[in-house]
Amino acid sequence: MSMINRRAFVRSGGLALLALGLPPEFVTRSLLAQTRGAARKKTLICIFQRGAVDGLSMVVPFGEKAYYAGRRNIAIQAPGRENGAVDLDGFFGLHPSLSPLHDLFKRNELAIVHAVGSPHPTRSHFDAQDFMESGTPGEKATRDGWLNRVLAETDCDACAGRSLADGAAHTADHVAGQTGMAMVPALRGIAMGPALPRALRGRHPTLAIEDLDNFGIANGRDASLEDTFARVYRTGNDEVIGGAADGAFDAVQILKAANLASYRPASGVRYPQGNFGRSLSQIAQLIKAGIPVEIAFADIGGWDTHQAQGGAQGQLARRFDELAAGIRALYDDLGDRMDDVVILTMSEFGRTVAENGSGGTDHGHANCMFVMGGGVAGGRIVGDWPGLAREQLYQGRDLALTTDFRDLFAEVVHGHLGAKNLETVFPGHAIDPAGWRGVLRG
Image 1: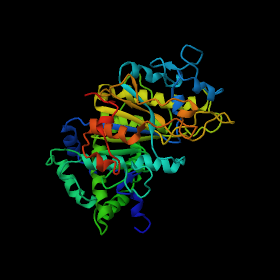
Image 2: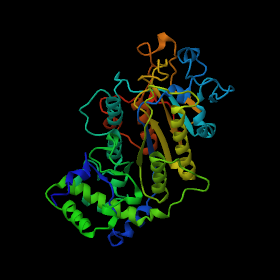
Image 3: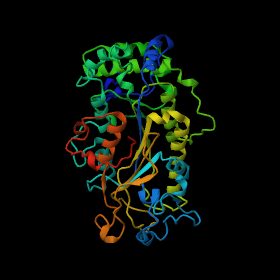
Image 4: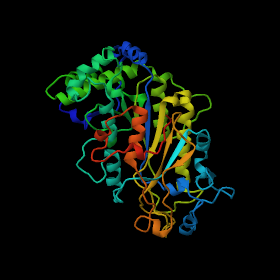
């Protein structure tokens, strides 16, 4: 057993299962039956655009003369012109590659928050991503993520404050329906990828799944390895690892019993090729199978466009093509289930208003984010627009911040997932509902 690194399976309180296929006799199908018997859950799907997307190309302020003054080569033209923006409200327009999302805006199911982001001035990708995922800008000592704290805060009363080790026994109560919540805690928060993002790390058990098709130890081919894993991780001296493993094994049983291989996208739906499309497809797979996922997380990179960014065409446009195709496929695949789903996009910071000498943009400040779903009060650009005249810019170069990302995130998790103790989700930040942007209905 010395060859197996026990701690490789545990990352900051969550278990990252990278190929944990268990044989059919290990599956208890009653777990799935109990899970499906519960009320349909609300789900938040977070999409992180890593690398700092250019929000001024994502949602174009074509009504601003200063936008065109600073971008002579890469600006997106106004609606009605060749390769122009897709008009939203006479002042803002979508990048033409994002046109598949325009219908959601017209259906009032897409709200756009502009001039949103972190109040911290860092232009470091690594620090800014950590701050956005920890939910504590400027505070590097925070060990857990804001999404993990949401899961802990919205857990059942009997779960609150439990350690991972204690949670193992309580998981059995969930599965048996004795808590009134027939579910496995580890299935509440899932990241599609090889490792947990910082936003999902913390005391509440969560899972990272790189590929549902290969979810298991050695894909079930080595029974002795599976037995050894069970013996070491479900018993032993390390209660944190043992507790996490118990929740993970219960999660694996449910996923195996769900017959996920039978999933097919809805008629006419085609996800884009690549990791992003596969991640969104597998999130849909879980939701349509009745798995009670409350928070799902996916990444899409490639937004750091210092050189040859392009305008309506080029490298940035290709990233928008993939983003829009993936989101629209997910939306259409879920169909009426989108009544219970909110999709939230985010990126660590925006980019400079002016293009640089290499036909790109450099690290900036405020940005824009999308909020989508049947319960979204969409069809609007929300937030206070600060303007792009030089005297209106942050540090004379960037879009200024008018919405703190924590206020937007707090509004979404409060209204959609029922989080109430927002001071524990975003410590050190005074949440004032009076300043919320009204992105959700009701």
